[in-house]
Image 1 (cartoon, rainbow, N blue to C red):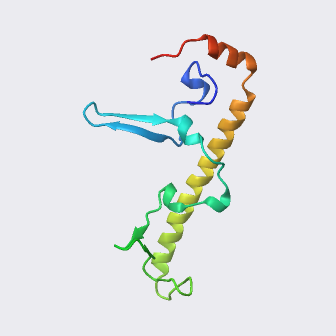
Image 2 (image 1 turned 30 degrees about the horizontal axis):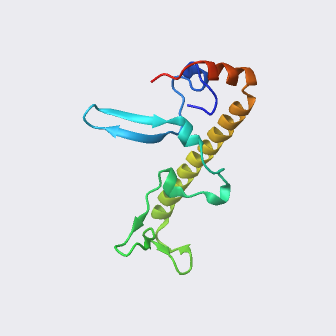
Image 3 (image 1 turned 120 degrees about the horizontal axis):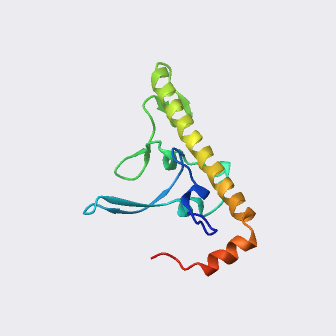
Length: 135
């Protein structure tokens, strides 16, 4: 759940928290899914320049050759919307804004997890070393 030892989940998360997790495994036979909060918070620092809306729920379409298919009404040459496609533009902008909100929430979650791990006292880490890991 975190870089530091966690005795009880409530030290990190609460009921009804909305957070980002990484899907580790899907076991169809047992109807279970394995998730990792720790792995979702690991990795490179998120920078605003690295925002990719497709990683935060915005669908992207590609042709058979792997080329990006722009939304209907968007002129890829001029990088502008064509007249008469206001509805499509509004929908695209709405989806983009929602993806950006998810990105910012994930960025905040990572920063909070990093701060919480940094605030963990050395005594907490020593206690964690003495407690055998559950299998």
